[in-house]
Structures are given as structure tokens and as C-alpha cells.
Length: 608
Ligand code: F6R
Image (cartoon, rainbow, N blue to C red; front, side, top):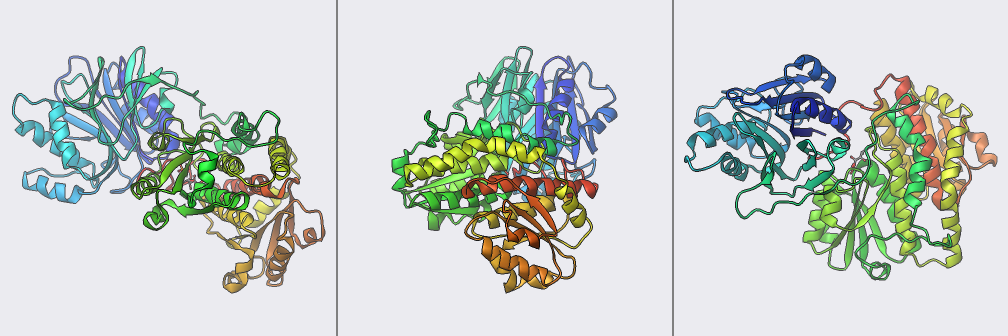
């Protein structure tokens, strides 16, 4: 979702375009750029366009070469359609002030009414444009001894909502920045000081990073970060991690590459988190000790989308392996007041660590006395800094919009957490840990052994009636929901997911001759119940795509059989997710969808 990149350097705009390219994975629909040249006074050069950064490069046509300060933006529309006029940057009428913004200005309507009384006319439908006119008015009306930073601070104080803003003014030698509820980081390298929505573009350009906090308002220039008196300036720290280029290599898409990354990313998530004798899980990083966690009243998990389905599986693990009550909540629906107290722990589960709904739920949890932690992928993200404890997913950067390898690492990390606090016998724990250690190889085998069944199933689904995913016994029904979400995201086919037992209570009415039903059936205690659900579907004409490790009689019910490798029943979501993801991918490709960048979706959802 929206990306900001700004830079003070030689050929600043070229570096901004490169930065924007590295932010593309966040998802966007238009892009724009502004730059100041040495010795420049007068209107700032800008360009903006709907489409991709490559379109912006063509439109800019080399006009920005030689610039010394530049800001750029990738926009994911919230206020106003996808048009050139609504793309950022937005400029003052005289062109001397220009800025880019992520987030939502909630009082934009009120501010625009005030501006209109002052004679300003808005030329876009965005909430952002009010900020630039407020800046213009402030600079023109403030007393002479005040600075541009003072004007910027005064404008920021009038805003309500969330923002990350980068603004430049003709004649100025730096960039004004502010954040509140939307991410913004500052990077420093030998030849540049830069600002970005996340650290990805800093790799290769900056060696140090400074993380802004909500409410920060700074001026960044060649000499560093400055602020108004009394504000704390964040210190620079070494930039951790390595840049992984968004390069699918031999794979057709990033999504497919990331599905195939899973043996490696799962090895990484286990590394250092199993005792030396290989018998027990030991997930560190949480402020509370396992003993303290065991004595809590409850553990709440808050997350969105795919992360929520992972959270549902994790809460099932916690309930199964310990006596602590645990529940997963859709972050935007989190009833903090009813489920938080000082004797609770609320864990945010997130790939990006920037999802606003999840961050808000964590804030609410904290406000209501709960301890908070995070399980997230991006090092230094807002969530990891807010909670300052928890566990990283170590999945490496995930670029495709549809989350795949991160889902598996969330489930695996959650399982390690549940085992770390567990009250099960040593023998039982050892058995699960042993299977976990074998998992990367098992999944690798699963990925390589392609018997064509997924392809057959994809052909069955891609132009048929909407499929229904079913599972049973908690984990498989949660996985069914993730299957339906993945399929909808990248094929645009409406899908339903439900526990097998629920079919007969209504949704079975949807079935007719040929309706595809995807049944996820690990060999566990629920297999015979799933057999009944499948028979109910078959007798209404449904075609069954059966995902199972069983070789028993249930396989005879399959119209397409997708055979998975056997593992410990508690690990079945980690094995069954592979065909589920591949099926969605294949259907998406057959339907001609840009699976890495499906329409309307953003990788990092930083608005509520
Ligand atoms: C689906 C997907 C989304 C995210 C959700 C939460 O493939 O990627 O549903 O899982 O937006 O994002 P994070 O994990 O960054 O908090």
C-alpha cells in the first residue's frame, strides 16, 4: 500500500525512482515524482501518472537528471479514483511546495472547507491535497522569524488521522517529514540521506537506519536530522538484514518462487529454536517467561487475512498443548475491553508488521492492561518496535501480494511458541519436534513430486462454479478458509470455506451437478466424519478434489486426488497448505490474472 521514497544526493530523482521500484511490491495504482535542482528557485518540477513506476520513468523522460533533492510516491487509491490528478505529489498553486502522503486525513473535509473560505481551490479528490494548501497558507501568514519546519509543525497539528508525509519547498536544502500511524524510516549512506516507507530500498544505498515514531516531525538534510526544540531525534542504527531482489529467477512468478522457497524458509524458522538434543522447542524473544505465560488467564492473537487464519491454527496449538485459554481475533474486530487485563498476553501476527488494523488492536490491548508481543516478519517494523518483544518469522522478504511462505512460517513459529509453553509430556513433544525437523525435506519432496493432479484440479475449477473448501477438526477448517482466500485473491472466483459439518446446515444448497468441492482430509480422528461430508456433496453431484495423505478407502471418493506426504497430524496444515497454494496459483494463471499483483490488493495495508 502507498510507498514514499525521498532522497538528498546527487541525481536524487534517479535514486528515488529506484527506491520506488523497490517499493512496488507493496501494491499501487499510480506513481509520481518531484525534484529540486541545485541553485533552483521557483516552481518544483513534478511528474505523475497512473500505472507503474516504469510509466513514470517514460513520462519523466530524463527531465529529472541532475536533481539534488527528490521525493516520490506510489499511490494505492483510498480517497478519489485512480487518475493522474489524484496521484501524488500534490503541489501548491505556485508550484513552490510539493508533498507526498500515505495514510488518511480524517478531517480533510473540514480542512478543505476552511481552505475554500481562504480562497484555495482543490484540484484533486484526495485528502492529501489539503495539506499542501495549508502549508502554503501557513508559510504566507507566519511571522518572519519562523522557519519552514515551524510552518510544517503547525500544519501537522491541524491534521487528524494517519500519515507519513515528505514535503519539499523550493529553495530548501532538505525534506520535511512526519509520521503518525503510517510507517516512515530514514536511511543514511555514504552519498545520501533518504526517507522511505520501509527499509527494502535502503539495501545497497544506506548502511544505517533511523526509525521514526508516531508524532515525529523532522527536517532532514545533508547534515542529518533536525527538529524543533524539545523533540527527540532518533539515533541511526546499523541496517540489519539483506536485500532480496524481487526476481523470480527460473520461476514464472514471484508467488511460485515463494511457494517453492518454503523448505528453506521453514528451515530458517526452526534454526536455533530447538534444543541441542533435538527434543524440545525453545522459542525465545518474549518478555514473559514460559512459566509466566502458563499462568496467564488468556492469550489473544490478533491478525488480518492470511495472518488471521495462521493465528486460528496457532490458537488451536496453544489450546491443545497448554492449559492457557487462547483465541484468535480478526484485528479490526478485536473486543479489547472484554478480553484484556493485566493477566493476559495479546500477540500481533503479521508479515509486514505495519498492518494498521493489527497495530490498532495491539494499542487497544495495551490500553486495557494486556501484555503485548509480536510474531512478525519484517525486522524493525512498527509492530516489532511497538511490542519490543516476540519472535521474527525469518521467512525472508515476501514480494508477491498473496502471502504463501510467510503463512507457513507463522504456523511453524506459533507451533514452536505453543510447544515452548506446553504442558505435554516430553515424549509427546519430542515426537512433534522430530517431525518438525523433518518437515523442510518432506515439503521439498511434496513440491518436486508433481503427478499432475493439481493441474487437473485447476482445470476443473478455473471456469466452473465457485468452489467450496471444506475441512474438519479445527486446523483443517482454518486451512480451508486460507485456501478460499488464496483462491479468491488471485483468481477473482468467489469461494466459500467452512467446516465439513456445517455444509448440511445451509451451504449445501449451493451444490449442483459439477460443483467443485475441495476437501482437506488429513489422516486424523476426523477422517470418517469428513467422509460423511464428502458423500453428502457427492450425492448432490459435486466433484471432489481431495487433498489427503491417506491411501485408504476415502481416496475412492475423489474425482481428483491430490496425495500429500504423511506427517505428524498436528503438522498437517504445514503440508496441506502446499497443494492449496499451488491450486490457487494454477487457477489464477489459467484465468490470466497477474498473480503477483492481483487487482485492488496491496501487500502492506496501512489504512483502517
Ligand atoms: C493474503 C494476504 C493478506 C495479509 C493481511 C495481513 O494473501 O497477504 O490477507 O495476510 O493483509 O497482512 P500482514 O501479515 O502484513 O499483517
